[in-house]
Length: 324
Image (cartoon, rainbow, N blue to C red):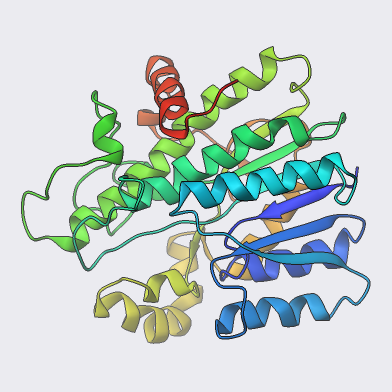
């Protein structure tokens, strides 16, 4: 089954090798790749363009998209719907929701939409994209790939100072109150972890919706923890100097030992391959749910409450202003 594959944050450490794997192994697909800056002024977009250039027959294009602006997400969705309707793009086969945001060195950041930026980029904006594009999948269905992290599971990540949780008042996810102390790392990581917990929790409700709709039941949603990526640029973006030093010097030197201690520690390239295998249905076709690497797994306890899943589903419809 060929079709269009959309990847957000397509110039990230994981996404560039994912794009390479997609174009090399699945050349019949059309890749629609979104980045915040489409120019070569962004060195990572330049790397993405160089990766595409290795495949002169590839059907791949780069598009500007800032998930911190919901108006831009809606405009992008409009353009994709129109292109699929007029035949300039094949029907959607996969939507890979790779973009994220964190700030571990400052307080909460808010977007122009009034939402905390980690939750908007990881969850709300991707939900807009997904809900707007469900009708653009082909008759054979396809796959939605959401990105989790072990951070969503209390006690699993060494950066955790305050455990993630879905609050009873869901508005606190998108409009959290001021931090109780000046622990930027602790509260910043909690906001990131909460965004990943929301992604996983919402995934279960999304799948229930897809399964009950006859025209959508062949679309499957998965949430993957791609692993702790020791070479990811994320470790050097909005992070304290400790993490920057560890990512540049400690992780490369001790990677085999670290991997022995934590089997999910691996390279971005390895993770990128797995994401494409899931996205194309080459791995675990028709399966839904949570994965650690390419292994079906049980997600964190905070994501498994069906009542909270449904409440988050309904609240997300309000945040996205989506109509189904």
